[in-house]
Image (cartoon, rainbow, N blue to C red; front, side, top):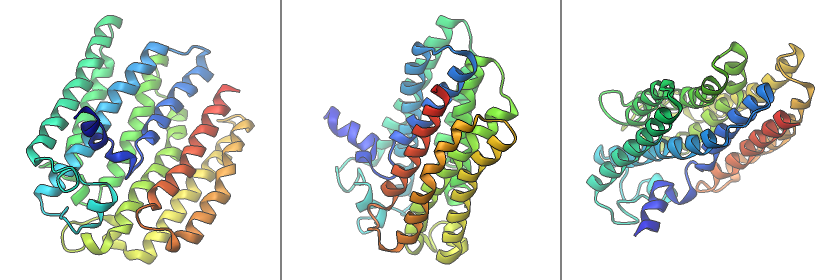
Length: 293
């Protein structure tokens, strides 16, 4: 039973691959290590687990509200791509809601205990913002996903995660740290956009997404442009001496991105997000290595 709940929480590792959230958390810690030479192991595990529960709650709320609002049905694309818990695991919808709330409670509890031990409660403020995004992604009255701002709000949440880690350890959120969190967050924006791009026909007339508004041709141009901007931002950061030249190794991902968009039409729908996810995880790993060298 525990394994079943775990697989539901992480969507069997699909759509989108949850390990990418842990990559950006590790990037935040790598950046702090580069600046201070200190790695806070206790806070690292607290952040992984607490933010992990918060990110899981997004999946659970998403599945619950998409089912409740009639977007996810037995024959919907997302039902097959992510092994929808109601249809694949035969879980009752209300249980999804309970699990989502339980995940948020655990996330808050972990951060609260750690904050009490450190006598520092600033992380709770970031946690409140995270909860608002986790629930509001599909939950009323926000329903970001249904109002064509879902990917944008989640991109902002990734920037928030990175900079909350920086603030707790360095006690300062600078323009540099915000700029450095943007490229990977933009790549994650594209990853989330890919799912809505794939589901344009299913979503049309049900919910409003950017992909539905733009259509397929313009969506591909948007995804290609955003991916190029994310990678090229590193070049500009090096040029303006925000980053060390060693960070240029992240450009290794550029030809993989070009190949991905060249072949996007021939990649099976169920695999498309994982293909892109592997590329941007490579970007994140190279960024971490650059911080540690």
